[in-house]
Length: 138
Image (tube, rainbow, N blue to C red; front, side, top):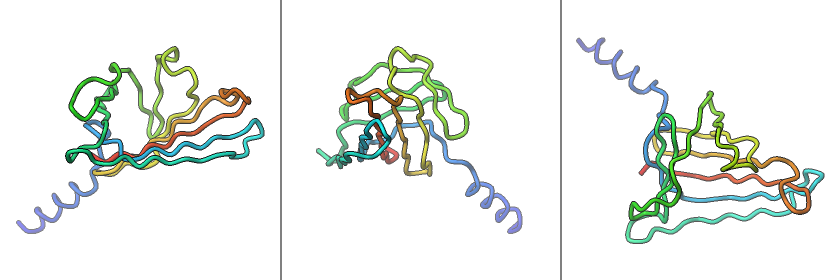
């Protein structure tokens, strides 16, 4: 019996964390690059709790993602995505035309980091940007 319990416990710990669910946006770091790909600026926003809640959260289903204000009101409509490993693709390119790569850089049971990289030349000076958002499970 104890061998069976040990085997079951190991399988639970080895389970891959799920992207699906609600994630509080905890911080956002933006990196700006010039046309030669040299970083020219970096800024981080750490979101503060208000009444025990973060300002916004994102909800992932297996096929869509949607952002909400902390009171549950919709911030942006649900958008379809596909996932291949750590890569996220948004088929609605008209909605996110500046994105070239969206990558999950960390996914645990409690934390999620996503990197949104723009198409080179997106910015006025022909530079680009990367936004890294850190989420914690809601």
